[in-house]
Image (cartoon, rainbow, N blue to C red):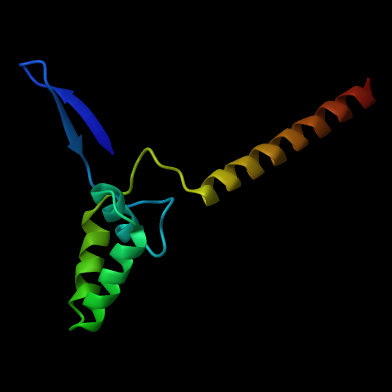
Length: 107
């Protein structure tokens, strides 16, 4: 997330926040969030993470700590969640239409 903040002199300051990505997530969104923060390809961050895992295993501990410490992006909705919402909306709409039809038939 990037926020533009204006200081007393009227100059804009760009302030970035590090979040876990839900859209570009493989396990917990840590690598995707870091990639968004540094504006690099998430595949590069994932490859570096795998490299750290194989070079002593510290990568696993760092990843788990980052998973715990870095919050999810509150403004981002994953495609899966969006699809589930749309599916729920369709079911509710269909149910409401069925109720309306039943009411019309009873009259």
